[in-house]
Image (cartoon, rainbow, N blue to C red; front, side, top):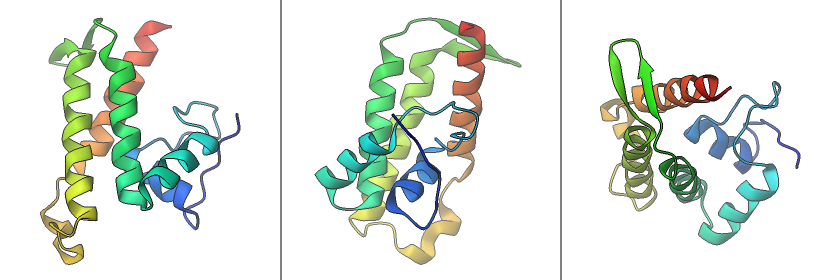
Length: 126
């Protein structure tokens, strides 16, 4: 299943919001077809990103492996909680509860943190 990263498309915008952007290296969670499904189901890319994060969290939540990242230690379900919190935030944004100009108040470190934690967890699996 192919995956592309192009910010002029809604699939690309979803990828950016969920930090599933490493398609050139072949390390992506969702194909374009899967992201298109989320977009068709929700009709809006913020909601589609939230749906994708919930799906990704469900996948990781089935794994009970311990992960150690620097001084932080936990299991993959800790990452799931962060993903679900970001999904809630994206749904509020899509509903208009978080105004567009309010992005400065959002914690933009969460997507990068999630991406790093997932990458480290995947590295430990290899």
